[in-house]
Image 1 (cartoon, rainbow, N blue to C red):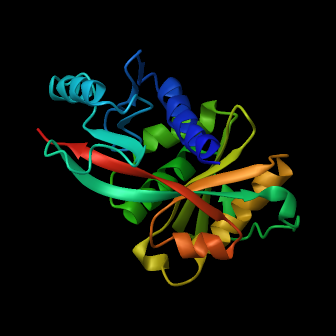
Image 2: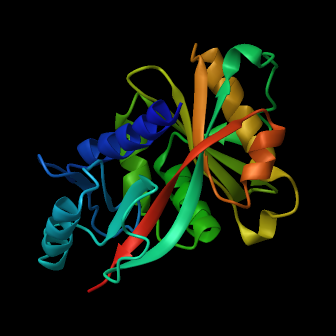
Length: 239
């Protein structure tokens, strides 16, 4: 199941790169580098050989590629002094045929459709993940993509949670950017958002829903019925 999970992620980044006209796709790798945003800037979808990785590193140093790289585990970067480990995530999936269709509460979660809501999502995501998400990226997604649906969780007119569902070319639904601001933590908002997005995926006719969970988030997703498979890792290229 690893392949469709990772494929969804790579298609998601590729799609955003196409929308923002920042995708660089060569025989070597794919990369997205959006100005004035830390997300989703990275290098991905490449052959994990020493020769290729060395060439990618040189191109990054020359400013032709971004400085963040995502790769499947196991890989040869863990002991490489030219790379700093940033994070690991578990590849997870659920068969939506086992999920009961239920009505969803739209009083706290709504789909982002306006520039003002795009700004609110970007601010929420930036606070949740502690890196800058450009509101112009979200606005472009919201106005131009038919494959991505963006959502915010609000409480007392404050946006404190976020989430995205992306439908790839196989109609697998990928859950991305599920986060909660410090003000909203401890309220089960991430779980509520995940359940909401699962219903979106099922209503769309997807068979599988996939995501990449942090080590902290993995137990939550397992309780919701997700199964863990392989892992991906993200590294920073040392200058």
